[in-house]
Image (cartoon, rainbow, N blue to C red; front, side, top):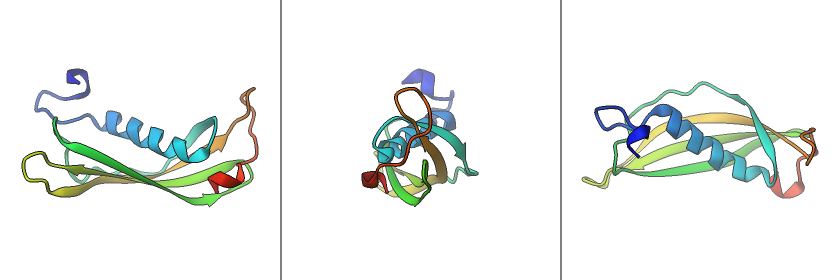
Amino acid sequence: MPADTNPAGDIFGGWLMSQMDLAAGRRTHGRCATVAVEAMSFHAPVQVGDEVSLYADVISTGRTSLRIQVEAWRRSQVTEESVRVTSAVFTFVALDATGRPRPVPPEAR
């Protein structure tokens, strides 16, 4: 959407980071909160019309927390070339219905 781009037609990094957060959050199998994101560096821009693919892998779990590696790739609509745009490790805490930490379910490990 136009509100998600700069005047040059590149997608804002914050929009991409929010998509990465959503992709990682799906790996927690329930309500969770993002508590940290390790350093992100953007290697290439994502332009309007590019296809964005996100890949999330659980790299470690604690009793109530998960660390999830997320990579973002873009595929140009013009060249069909795929390029890794960025990656980061997201740390989540699993939450119960009242917002308190809960044990990470076995299916999220």
